[in-house]
Length: 98
Image (cartoon, rainbow, N blue to C red):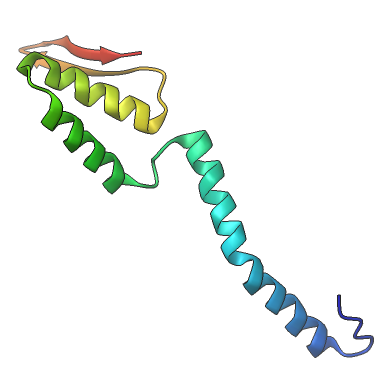
């Protein structure tokens, strides 16, 4: 944009100014791409709040574990998630999603 031949300081200042001005746009685009690819991994409080809301709506005790597994799998965009109980020496499937 600026043609500053021979003046390195002005060129460096212009490059720094452009980098500072475009940083919010880059951060916004990066958050959008991360959410698209990885789900809500960067927003744990939002995931916990959504899980809390879904658990408040769940009335049956048998549905609590499946609600937890489903919410975590959807938030992290996982193809499969499960909760396993340890019964003495074996693992027993308690809930799964996907």
